[in-house]
Length: 326
Image (cartoon, one colour):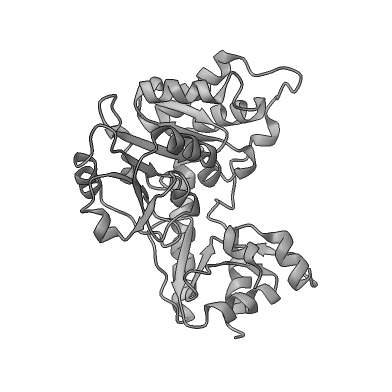
């Protein structure tokens, strides 16, 4: 099995090279990205001949801040949360722990970070890195427990929270807890909920002083004109956002019903993907891939398989039929 499929979702080229293209188009269910993206990205009037004006970047951060429920001074746009995590990790430094299993970058944000389970994380008082909802198991932590974690931190001991999958149900977000005096930093993704990962846009939410230092590292033009224009318009599209949250819940429920019917127990509370645990996860991955359906296996958890949302009823039926011919 190719290491590319374990490294990150979306390794479609590697899958095609190994399994071939066959007689039908590939169905990529290996990512946790909304398969029905914000529809107006291709209609935006992008000026490719000019660098983005500072006022346009400020408008983007203001639109995102309004969406997150924060003052704009607590929001810094970055060219993808991956870069934001690594920059903040380098700025904070020092001893740290990251909740595992989780997103691979969490263990790389701060040199020497030690993996811990959730129960152990509740008892630690140093800098802690975690995701809510978590990836890949979709576990959600109640805000009361997150508040207890935050209360154990002060000074140079931070709570660094990855909320890349929080948009589908913002009630679980800790964004409203961000304050200048609190050692809390939150990372938010644009591409997952809005289905536009190629835009490479994310946000860091945190104390103003920390974000001022982050902006100095990013430089004068951290984002493309396309990212600024698309992000601003998408965050202002409240009707699409509300409708999409409803549709994602319906799609996740339909996927739950399908997986349960085939004898699997879907796990997770993130509407963008489900995790199943089965002794034949590797064989199931291979069988689906042979039918041009890509899912996400995990080398460290060989019994796990993560399955993203099928984009439409036809794709759901195709997954149903393939699972039924095992």
